[in-house]
Length: 137
Image (tube, rainbow, N blue to C red):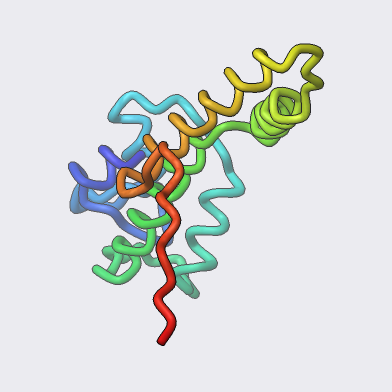
């Protein structure tokens, strides 16, 4: 639909007009989108405040809002699902809370953690800091 909005004259209040303008759904269809949600058309007309039966060109503000909402929808589709995020968190928690049966396994895990922290914060040192001497007078 985003490509259709960019490449067509978008109108409100009708499917098409005599000047070649089209509604956003037809614009999407002409650009390869194969969706047909009547609820979108009704919501679009309600948003634009169409009162009569006459079609008109969409204003720049209406088009900017439509573009922004479409881009936000695309961005939301790229986000991982809640189930994926929960699975990842559970996996991290399980790795973090494992029990060590041998001291050398524990030492290796602590060393790995220090490397991970150093990679996440480049200014952090992996070696312990030298104790500072305190001078009292």
